[in-house]
Length: 165
Figure 1 (cartoon, rainbow, N blue to C red):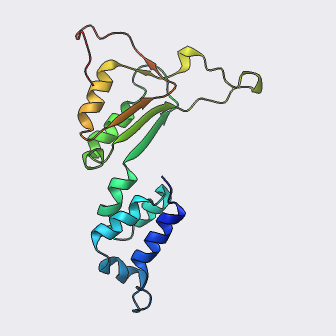
Figure 2: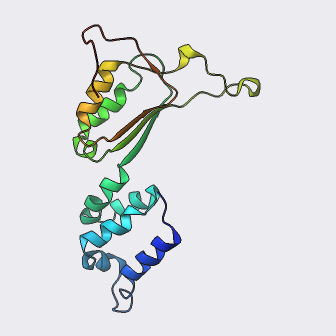
Figure 3: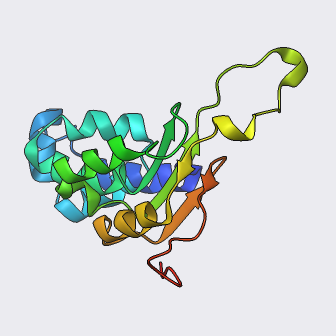
């Protein structure tokens, strides 16, 4: 999400005057209330959020929910287990998992000759097991939306008659 001109104007009003009282950028982050920083970060693009998360511990804590709210994970691997590295990442970074609300699992298709630009052979796409999806949803307590893009879903899991997500 990018800031509209109206958002930029509102953000400008929130932060104006800090330079007039002689505060440096580092000092101003201590002066701005957390809820104002949160409002500003809500409209910041991801590169800005990443930079802000490195300014201070306080800014990191305010920027992280916005930085990881929407996540796109693409893989070049194909077949079952294509996203196992992502599950391992979530295991090692459980604090980040609580921020993810919108997740897209996709496929970074390898380049093909110009004549077959839109052709991706079925057997070279990643395969996602239903059990993987259940495990993934369990690890993401605030997940609201999950998209599968350009990947295959395997057959029914014989241990379950239905999968509830």
